[in-house]
Structures are given as structure tokens and as C-alpha cells.
Image (cartoon, rainbow over all chains, first blue to last red; front, side, top):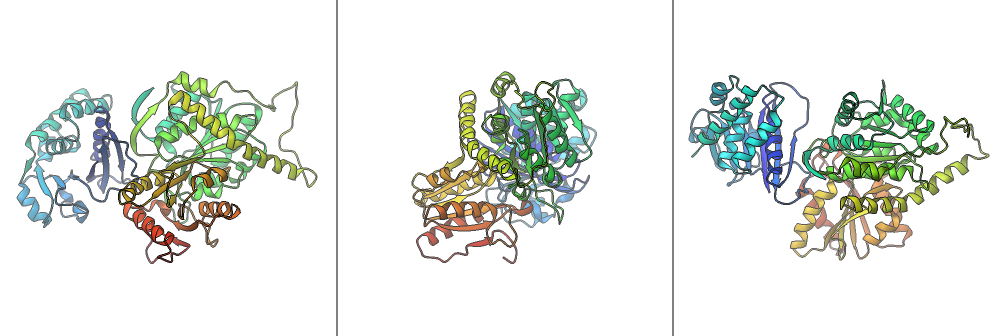
Length: 187
Length: 393
């Protein structure tokens, strides 16, 4: 089973990203759960969301405490201790961070895990015109952790966002997703 | 049949659309809100002909349900927590008048302090209200069970309201894989409504809610108990017929790896699923662990439970609600009474957990399971009652 923890801020589409990934896995006939950390909903406040994916029915209804992958959608969260909670030696941490994974490791003062960075804010601004990084960070995650194929994820992004945002904005999100998928860098 | 990515709340709203009752009266409350929102949308989009009655409170919601059901219509509602508490006196009017109303209860803690997360204090408070209570372990069960609620409630041998309970947020809001039935399959399974003794009948005038003193009151109550007892068989039959149309049968008690189990955990709802994963892990280590989960809490399935517990040395009962000061929480009290009257020497240990949504980890469950194993072997003295996963405890 693959367990993913998403970190972001209210209004950045954190929960949407967790749900798009889960729903995408259904297209590959997998089992899944996606759920946010429920609390007061405040724009800009740090929040987490979770995705589980497996080939068998998922029976665990506890929180995710030892994630296989952590996705950090907002670089202003870097330094927040919750990002690295439960991170093991093989866990991936993929951050929206404009500098190298080595720099990120120094900033996090982290000994463990495998770190990846991507310029998601820049990518999102260039494509979408707003620093909404959820589709970019989904791309970055799948670039290093093939939970579902890139094509499946794109299908699900189109399915989820069609009718909710303008067609040109949807295409911009797909471009953001692809760029981050290609550009994510490891140590 | 279609497989979708959905939440339990969304699936229950879909079930309500497929059932298309005559009347829905409900007031939105977290975490039930989506059920009411989505169903209200079906009504406003003209996808159902249901009369949706928006009300100013849950007391009024249940009052509308009582009136509409007595008048001779098929009625559904949904609530959580304070909403159920506010329905209190009307719950008894519904059951006492033998009105087959179905309710989705999305379990949530009660105030104070205010908390929106899951525990079973709301439904446990209503356990003596004369409603049948069914508990669901996941979103699939919530959808399937909600479709079974009305055939159980409306059965001529039962005629009692039914509460379908599932865990707030943990199950209600988690996106997961759900198999939905076709509309026609659900429509056929539910069948057309046959009103029994409708209030709105000039040919056969009846009275609901008369004054009944010590001359007949006890006979009314006795009949409610008898209906509850008959409901056990109807619930099993309905669960089997549902299996024929869906491939998923339902009974009274869910048993997991209990055939040769020596230690067992008992829990309602989603926690029973998590416990299965721990039981698998212990089985791999050669420990004979199993899980039982009563699907039906009222009427209490005593016989089915005793059968499932055959051969067990120690049972740990997990309660997501407390009966303050009783020294035994609701599920453990009932299982204990069943063991006592059967003359069983199974050791029972009760733990209250997960109040206000407190997470119960796999490790918490494993530790408790292992302490049961030691207690079963007589190697460890274990507290009969305690809180699990609490500070200072």
C-alpha cells in the first residue's frame, strides 16, 4: 500500500490534489482512500490531506503516521516540523522549492528520507498565472513516485476540473502538471 | 452496476435518490450535511418527485417525518450528533407509533466541549429509543445498508424505524471505491410502498398517539419488544435478498477469522476494519486472533454473537462512547450480559477509545490484542475497564 501525505495551505487545492490522485487510481482498477485533515477551514492556514492506494481493498481507517511520500505544495511551510513527521529512510519528500534538494535538506536539517524539489510556484505562475500549485505538485509526485501513470492522472484532472474552471485554465493546469512531472529533481 | 470514486455521504444521497421516498425532512448538520445538500439538489433538479421539507430544526424534521409517515407515506431523514439529540422526544414518538422511517445517522461526538468528529455518543444515547440500529464499517456498507433499511422497517412483522449509522468524517467524507446498483435494481428491491393504517383514510379511520395509561401502555411496549425480536430474522432475510441482487450479503454479526480464534476484538463500524488488519498481522505470528463486529446493535444479536465467540478465551470490547460512571461502556455491557446469561467463562476487557475523533493507531490495537493474549493465558492481570489512547490514563 502507498500512503501519501499532502501539505499545503487552505485555498491551494490540497484536498483536490489528494482526491484527483485517488480517483485516478480507480481508472487503473485500484483501491484507494482520500481524506483531508478536518478542522476549521481557513484560507491560508496550513492543512494536510491524505491518499492511500493499493491493489487490494483498504481496511485501515487510522490516520497516516508513516507516509511513503510527503508532498509540500507551499515553500513557506518549509521549517514546519509536521512536514517530516514519520518520515522513514525510504520515504520521499517532494517540495515546491526553487533551490536544490541539497539546499532543502540543509533547511529541513533532515538526516533521513529521499528529497526532491521542483519550482512549482514558478511553473504555475508561468502557465496558470496564479501560484496555485496543486496540479504541478501532483505532476512532481508522479514524476518520482508512479502511483498511477501520467496519462491516467491527466484524464482524471480533465474529468475533475471540466466544468469547474475555464477550458483554457484547464489546459494551463495540464501544462503545469507536465512541466513539473519532467522537472522534478532528486539529490 | 457501476464502480465510482465517492464518499459514504454521496453514496447515501444516491441511495435516497434511487429509493425516491415520498417525503424527506431534514436539517443540515456536520458531518451529515452533504447528504441533505445533495438530495436537495436532486429535488430541485427534478430528478426525484420527493417532497423535501426544509425545517428550522431537527425536532421539526422528526416531527414532519412522524406526521408524514403516519399519514401513509414513505419517509427518510438524516442527522448527526446535536441534531439527533434535538430529535430526542420525537424519536420515541416514531418508534412508539410503529412508523417505518429510515434515518442516516452520521456518527459524531456530542458537545460540550464542541467537537465535530466521530464517536458513537449520539447513537448510543438513542439506543433505548426503540429504533433499530445498524452500524456500517465502510462506505460500501453504508450505501448497501441504507437500501436495506426500508424493507426492514416496513416489513409487516417489524414496523419500526431504522437508524443506519456510519462514522463521521472517517467514512462519511473519505473518497473511496464504491459499487453502485442500477436505479431499477434498487427500485425493485425496495418495492412500492404499502401504507399500513394510514391516518388519511376516510374508509378506515384510525387514531395515532392517543392517551394510554396503566390500562394498556405496557402492552404497547411489549409489542415493540416483540417487533424488535422479530426484526432479527427480517434483517437476515433482507441481507440475504440484498446479496442476491448485489453479490454482497449481510447478516447480524460480522466475523473475521473467528473460526478458531482464542482472542477477539469486538468493535462497531470502521474500527472493526482496522482491527482486521491487526488480526492478520498477529495470525502471521501464530496468534489466533479474530474480530467480531455487530452489524445490528438494536435488536442485540445475542445468539449470533455467542456462536461467533465459540472457543474464545478473552475478548476485548472497544467502545466509541462511554456510559459515564457505569464502569462498562454500552457495547461491552451488552456483550457481558450475553456472556453472563450463557454461563460463559470468556474474559471480557472493555476499552473506551476514539472519543471526539481521537485516532486509534494500528499499534494501539496491536498492544491491546497482545495484552488480551497474555490475559487469556493467565499471564497478565488486565484492567476490566479503561480508556485507550488518552493522556494521563
